[in-house]
Amino acid sequence: MVLDNLGSSLRGSLDKLSGKSRVSEDDIEEIVKEIQRSLLQADVDVSLVMELSDSIKTRALEEEPPGGTTARDHVLSIVYEELVDLVGESTDIPLENQTILLAGLQGSGKTTTAAKMAWWFSKKGLRPAVIQTDTFRPGAYDQAKEMCSRAEVDFYGNPDNDDPVDIARKGLEETADADIHIVDTAGRHALEDDLIAEIEEIEAEVDPDRNLLVLDAAIGQGAKDQAKQFDKSIGINGVVITKLDGTAKGGGALTAVNETDSSIAFLGSGETVQDVERFEPNSFISRLLGMGDLGQLTERVQRAMEETQEEEEDWDPEDMLKGQFTLKDMRHQMNAMNKMGPLDQVMDMIPGMGGGLMDELPDDAMDVTKDRMRAFEVIMDSMTESELENPRSIGASQIRRISRGSGKDEERIRELLQQHKMMSQTLKQFQGMGQGGDMERMMKKMQGGGGGGGLGPFG
Ligand SMILES: Nc1nc2c(ncn2[C@@H]2O[C@H](COP(=O)(O)OP(=O)(O)OP(=O)(O)O)[C@@H](O)[C@H]2O)c(=O)[nH]1
Image 1 (cartoon, protein in one colour):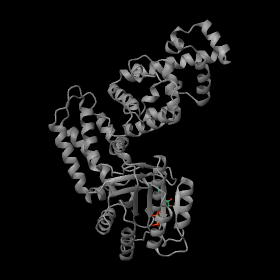
Image 2 (image 1 turned 30 degrees about the horizontal axis):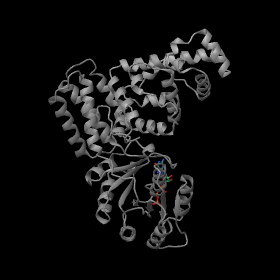
Image 3 (image 1 turned 90 degrees about the vertical axis):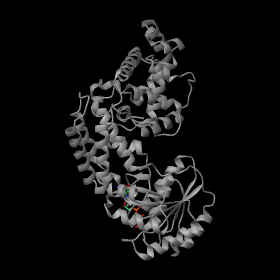
C-alpha cells in the first residue's frame, strides 16, 4: 500500500506527545522529519514534501489547540488535514449516463481498470459496457472479454478489426442500451507519437464525458511527464492509480495529480474485478495513518443496512447510544454486521478502535458466528416484545418457555443473554472512551444515510 510506513512511524512520534498539552519546536521537527522520510521514500516530489512540512510546522506551532484537545490530537489533526489537502478532492463521477475514455501506457492496468470500473458502476445500479479498442496487444481482446464476463457487464470488441476508431464507433452503436460506456485504449512502452495520434482520433470519435489516465502506483517521477503529455493531447479529468497492493510507493502518481491540477478518481488494489474503490481523500488518509476508515465503514454499513430487510420498524439507534441496548438492537446489529464482514474487522475501521484496542476486549465479545446468529434469531422469535425490550426481566421460567418455543436448549438461551450483556458492556466502554464523539457521529451517519465518506475523524 502506498506510503505504507507513514502511519506506523508517525504514530511512534505522535505517541511521544501523549500527556503533553503543548508541543515544542523539537517535537514538531521530529514529526515533520518522519513525514518527510516517508513521503520521499514513497516518491513524492521534493518540493511538494517541503511545502507540506512547512505548513504542518507553522500550523502546529501557531494554532491554538481547541479546548479539550491534547497536543497529540491537535498535531494529528493538522497532519491529517494537510495530507488530505495534498491528495486533493476525488474526481467528480456522477452516477448518470456517460462515456469514459481510459488512457495510459502499456501495462499500467487500463484493461483491468475498465472491467473494474464497469463492475463498480453495475453495483451502483447502472448498466455499463466496456469497449475494447486495443488492437496493438494480441491478448487484450480475450483479457477484456474474460474480465467483463466475470464482472457480468456488457462487452464489445472485435479481434478481426485492426482499426481502433472503427471499433470504437461500432462499439458505441452495438452497446447503445448501456448507461455507461468505458472505452479502453491501447498502450505503448513509451509515449510515442503514434500512440498519441491514435488516442486523439479515438477521443474525437467517441466524444467522451471524461478522460481518465491510468497510472501504475510504482511509476515514480515519470508519472508527471505522462500526465502532462496526455493532458495536452486529450485533456485529463482524473487519474486511476492501480497496483496499490504491490507497492509502498505511489508518491509519483500523487505528484502527477497535483502538478496537472487533476484529481484521483479510482484506486485499484488487485487483479480481480472487485479490487477497486472510489478514491475518497478522507478515508484514504485515515487509513494511511492507521486511524480507521470511517468513510469506507459508513459505505459498508449503508450497503448492509439497505440489504437488511427491515422487519423491526421501531428500531432506534438513538436509544442504543443512550445506553439502552436491547435484544432488538442486538438483532439489528447482528443482521447488519453479518453483511459487512467479521465484526472485529469492522471495529478495526473505527478511529480509535484499531491498533490493539480490540485485544483488550474479551475474545468472545465479538464472536458472533453465523451459526450462533441463526440460533439466536430463532430464539428471539420465541420471545415476547417485552422480553426483547427488557432482557433483564427474563428469568428461569421464561427461559424454559422460550426453549420449548424455539426448540433450542436452555443453555443456548443463556448464552444469548450472556452475549447481549457482553455487547452491551462493550458498547458502554466505547461510549466512555475519549473518541466517544466519533462513535456517536458514526452511529448518526449510519442511520442518517447520505453518501458514504466525507466524515473524517475530525469532521
Ligand atoms: N496486483 C495488481 N495487478 C494489477 C492491477 N491492475 C492491473 N494489474 C495487472 O497488471 C497487468 C497489466 O494490466 P492490464 O490491465 O493488462 O494493463 P493495460 O494497461 O491494459 O495494458 P496494455 O493493454 O498492454 O496497454 C495485468 O497482469 C493485470 O492483472 C492491480 O490493481 N493490482
